[in-house]
Image 1 (cartoon, one colour):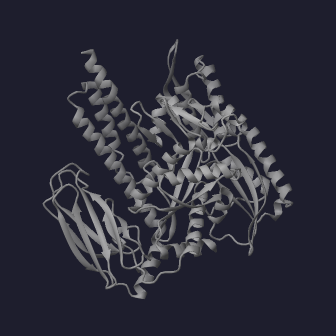
Image 2 (cartoon, helix red, strand yellow; image 1 turned 60 degrees about the horizontal axis):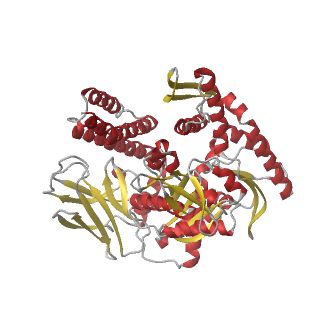
Length: 617
């Protein structure tokens, strides 16, 4: 009820608003796309790793690249910053955390907990700002518009100081924070059909578990009880798996890797992947080549972890979760039968055994309206929309249907959004999609479908005499300007090249009320199928671009690369290209991940291997 009202009103305001779930391990951002709450998608998925690293040149790395850097340089990788926000250095939990992380936790100027990496000192607030800034920048690049307002979700146990520091981090990243919302309330808001009643909000994240019983009535939302444990989360599940794997490696290979930080980090990554795989499979294979060395030679790990074995390992953690849930029900003075719905939040809530436990405790299956790892970000977005609604009045003269262009892969990219206030503008930077392209044809479209072919073609803007350059080497800024007379003017201007073109199109010719209804209905009916088809097309485009980059690197370095290495890399590239024709998005994404690793391997060779070769000569 609230969600529908807020989404519609937000679209009419045209505010650039987002909801952010700032997590211990992963952070997610939700924004509005054609009046639908949408999760920001990055090349590696929907989440940005809440991970920061500092390299030898004092450059700040954020996300997956920071994680890769920390594998070889554990002391220079910073994570778990959410646990340090607004905390005193001498707090027992901080002192305990010091012994568990490879980076330095130090005392700040005013006695607060700070961190150190590569001889640089940072407050946790500043490190969090780096992460939020990265998410904001990715969202702006994806949407091609400035993100200005946000609501951020915080754990229920955060005190005022911690919330203040989180808000300060977002402000430092360039956001106007309209509010901080508790994660359970955000999760409840994400469910569009939620009505009056009593609800259990089950949040299991990377480091913390919390359960809240809330009551929704016409008078608002009341939190009847809450229980939490800040040392019970997905990482604790990972730890028991890692400990099991360490023992198995000791038995099979007669080597103890517990003191090898790099090996332990690789093992932890593998344990996390296995844990997630067991949500949909009866067993997972932990395969790590060249994990470490021993007196007998290199250690290659290949261990099968059965779901039944995993569930036995984590049973003590499950019992702790059960105990907290029972205490929360007792404190709220409600029974399991009186809970109308159980709402899940947090990435760990996707795990099969966790969902089983929820059903055992509350005697009903949990709601799956929204994916658990998306719920908090979407709820924060809808809260942001409600705040904006209260601040503004409804504006007239709204754009009837979105205007945009066809992009690589056959997708439709909006530049002016439906319900934008007229007159309005929008812009986007495009680039050449092929090597040595001297001509670009830009298709101007109107509609709401994700696929360009399902929308109305208004016309084309032709750009000629473009300087020949590698793919992506020529950048062109497109600006759409729509006036109240139904005229859309499109300007195209080259960046650092002498190209300027413009054309006008009539966007009101096909915008009768009946046509608008039909276009919107068609978008809804085709939505799921279009999303799947577009996702496949876009993933294939990303894969093509990734392989193209590897091809360029090999061409650039072929004269300095040993013949054997070159043949090996070219063979791997050919294997990756053979996967391009498949219609399976999972296989394509796996190929992209593998290609990214291959690209990183090439870059590492160039940075270190080639210089060593030249030194030896």
